[in-house]
Length: 219
Image: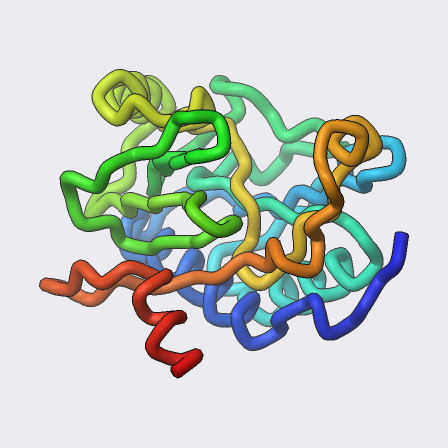
């Protein structure tokens, strides 16, 4: 694999991590918050490793995400917290989920599973041209059972990829490249250089797309 440090957008990673921590802290608002998880998967053998962080530990998570990505891992994060005593490289299932603070629509035009926005997302991460993760951060975090029910309704109504609304699903960290696994490289041309993640925190009342903003910057 040809690694290029410029593929890793460090300011974008930091901004995204800061947003996730801020939204999680606001939604959970004290008590037993649990921990956030950063998931890294190496494309060579698709092995999974998990790191865990207290809410507010932005610096540690940011530096790890940058390092993991620079080393050639695909890096992901979840819209939930898990119990703090979870150990090992298993991400944990429904029963290990403490709070759900965000649900994500996985809009995938490549699979004919694109979502036509009908509501304003909290954060939009463009995962590749025409594809995006729409993060809907909750004003108040919910438990796993309620989060699962909301996610199922979201998935049915959105008509997007099957990963939509799955509270245990991890989603790519903005600013990190997509390193295709061997199976994906056999199926398509390796587009790691052009598949860098981008992110936008959507201000209240704004409906501009990431792609429109990019076009203006390129003029």
